[in-house]
Amino acid sequence: MKIRITCALMSLILLLAVIGCSSYSNHGGHPDNTSSSNPQPFFTFTDDTGQEVVLVKKPERVVILNTEVLGLFYQLGGAAIARAKASGTPVPDAAKAAEDIGEINQVSLEKVTSLKPDLVIGHPRFHANLKDALVTSQIPLALVNINSYDDIQRTGKLFGQIIGKEAESEKAWKETENHIQTIISKVPNRSLKFAFITIASNGISIQKNGNLALDIANKLNLKNVAEDMQSGQMPSSVPYSIEKLIEADPDYLFMVVYGTEEYGRQKLKDDLESNPAWASLRAVKEKRMVFFPSDFVNSPGLKIDQTFEYLAKLVYPDTYEK
Image (cartoon, rainbow, N blue to C red; front, side):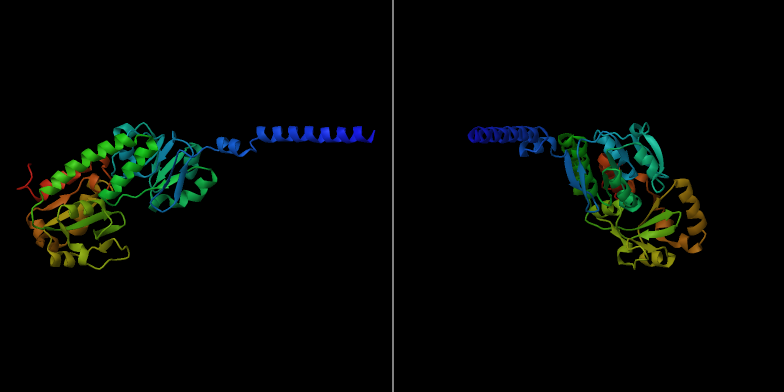
């Protein structure tokens, strides 16, 4: 009798063990099942602030808050469900159908989250403060910044990976790069001087560094007179001074407006031309003052070669075809 009870107990224990193992496996407890229920993310990268961005799947609901890269994203075959805007910055035709969610520096967090995006692309200066709230909502935020041609190339390759068109992106960039190298190869062995003046709602300044236009000018062997000037509160710029400009005697004055050109020309008239000393500048007397198109401050993306060509023909008309 005792033997029968013992055998029965052992059989019961074995049965429970089998049932337990079966139950454990069906709920993903086995290592193989765990890995299959947690697949590898679609893409992981580091943005321009050093933060890791993980995309669980290929983004299909992208919101672009950074107006500098909107055109580039579309040029490479991407599309956004919503976008921000900036005064004086044209919206690419292909992007006009995307929902307008306001000015780049006044984006509504509530509006962004209500769209349920699976990726938000912003600017470090304007949108870093959205990070914590977006993380809480499990929305990836990538902050990208364009200050040079290398930045455009790098961002373009990143977008190619995000969009899933890496090969097409590489091919397009190769064509653009070849054209740019052809332009640079013809640059004369002489250096002209320029001053890059920015006109914005918060004042007028002379740009020292940290700007796409300055990078292009440098690659075309142009010298920025502000390089040797003392920076102001912003390390990338110098407070405007007519005395410093007269002393530096630039060959060219390049004007960039953060806003409309109409606004910029009015500021020029009211704040610069009103000083008689302005007319004494050699660049003014020789009519070498130029208002740059928006492509010099807002990335033209794959069309960056046209921006190089524009400036090369402007300053070296005897070398490049008009």
